[in-house]
Image (cartoon, rainbow, N blue to C red; front, top):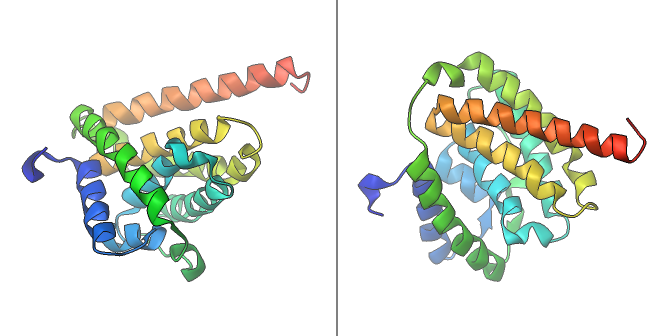
Length: 200
């Protein structure tokens, strides 16, 4: 895929690859430097995709991404234009070995995602939708530390965050509508599990 054909996710992944190849650690701080403080969508998107990737098995990673989600999505919900993150969070990084596995996973994912999304039905990614979606992501991020103990659930939670982030990054209103269905399905599944366990 050439630079002119790249979408939002492809550009982000390529720039992370370039910086990693130059010797920089892959961290939330690196994503912030590449995306910029005003690019809240990418700052949610790439960390969430890390948990969707095989690296979700790394202990503590879903919790770290959950904290990032709470801080970034919380600021979106409050209408902040620039996103602030504490230094201790931005300096957290993954090893070179894990970074190689992550980027190997993200290259085909970015091509597939960029091939599907485009700017359409942009009214669905306006301020109201962004803020409501951000509140949902805050709630999802808050439960991610607990999900580390339940296999595959952190991946599902990260998928909810990633789809929202991609929708607002690409200004894809149809993807935003699909995201509401994803959230509804997750709530229905959660309710069914609670009923099965006798907690609902």
